[in-house]
Every structure is written in structure tokens, then in C-alpha cells.
Image 1 (cartoon, rainbow, N blue to C red):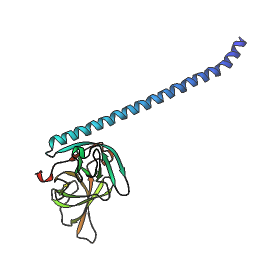
Image 2: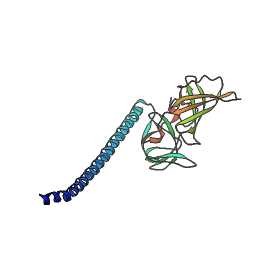
Image 3: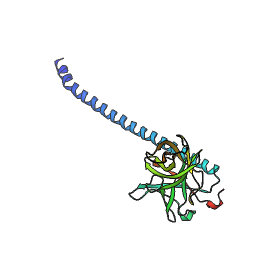
Image 4: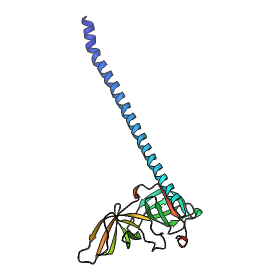
Length: 226
């Protein structure tokens, strides 16, 4: 009896250590399984978002009278001189300099460098990017330029211009690059400039610039667009 009591005292800590070791292993396995499931879920969600993006682009192409070429975004970058994306098509597919690039939500930029198999697109959040736009329904026009994040602004608007929050902003058609009435953004704020006869409209861009995967290039001849 005494021997077994002493043995149980000695063996119990060992059994406890073994059980703790097993528990730690099981906990680690569960943790790894959770990570795998989380990654799988995130991958499925991303795939679903990409699928929805492709559906929107397909609908845009079906509904549009414009001649569009689809492209994949293979790189994105920002430097002191240029905020851009690189796409996987070039002159071999009919891409030229200064062609409009858009997604289903609207304009995102223009081609600025065209190689045979790839092209660089200057995007709308570049500080040097300019776009001639109109505000609907009033029809007031101005030049849109990047401000910060997904916000741009239109300056030099007449102080008596009737502009309201929620008004749509579209391309004006005055440019030799962009066809008219392509969606751009929505007015989120109107500011009267102090001591001036002008006002400023702040615009939120409709396209999700930070997560571009697929885009379209308009290759139609603008002279042939109604």
C-alpha cells in the first residue's frame, strides 16, 4: 500500500505533464486549423469579389456602344512623379497612347506608356491627373483634380452654380481623350470660397482605385462615337 501511494505521488506529476503536453499539442493543432480555415474563407471571399467585379465588367461591355478591350492589372505603384497601374495588354491588342481606362463604376485613368504586350495607366488619384467633367443635372463644367484618398475636387465653379450633394459627375466630352457622360463620381460637399466669386465641389470617386484587378480600355475612335 505504501509503495503504491509513493508511486502515485511520483507518477501523478508525470501524468499531469504528459496531459499538459498533449493539451498544448491539441491547442496548437486547433490554432493551425483555425488559421487554415480563416485563410480559406478569405480566399473564397476574395474570389467572390473578383467574380462580382468580372460580372460588372461583362455587363458594362454588353451594355456599352463603345469598343472595349479587357485587361488584367499586373502591377500598381506610386512615385513622386506618377500614380499608376500596369496592365497586361499593349499595342499588339490595339492599345494606343491617351486612351480612356475604366471599370464598371467609371473612369479610372488613361494610358500613358504603351508597349507591345503591356501598358502603363496614369490613374485618377495622381496629383497631376486632370479630367474635364460636368455636374448633373445642372450641367456646370470644370476640371477635376485629385485631393486625397478617394476624394477629388472641381474648382473655379461659378458661385451661382446650382450644385447639390449627391449630384453625379460625368466626363464632359470636351476632351480629345474621354467620351462624354462616362461616370466619374458623386458630389459630397460644396464650398463657397471666401472673398471669391467661385465655389468648389468635392467629389468622391466611384471606382475602388485601391483594389483594381480588371479594367477596360476604350479603343473606339472618338470621332465615330455619337
